[in-house]
Image (cartoon, rainbow, N blue to C red; front, side, top):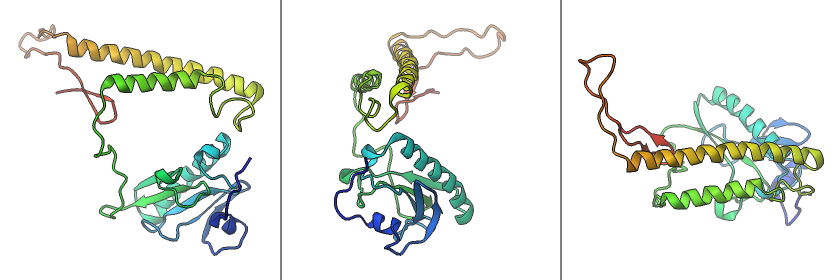
Length: 227
């Protein structure tokens, strides 16, 4: 059920009690221009029903809002001439949410506009791989739990047969990802622990020998070739 705690500026707007520049409406959602934009074209996509944060929004509605955001993003690019943009959700006070009616920012970006969401985060040291693997395993385990938050029957997400089908599909998908992650860890160990000798090119004796090189990890954990 929608949360209804306190006064909400966005609810006033939705009821017609506030001045607004509307750019999209349907039965469940609307979008309007931000009154303090990062750049011209900055808009907000909000549900008509009052949900305070991402944790409160039903999954199907959240997907609908994101679909609207993606559709509007292309229009904003065309109207503003900005090829770059951010689609941002601030969920909770610690994440920077200031109006506690869930909303999605669509922000066209221009070079040197002064706005930034710096990632990778410069204030964080890169954690040990064992910690990342432990967290990944914990997330996989929680996803496989049929009573996990957001997927249990009656929790606001899919219920009954739909919920069971979704759980089976998710479990299979996560299992494949877990297997891929295991192979990735093995590959890391193989590259880092086993010296690779040079070998000759079988096609061209005149070609210089090729050598194995250990991959390096990117800022987000991806493997990159170390040339």
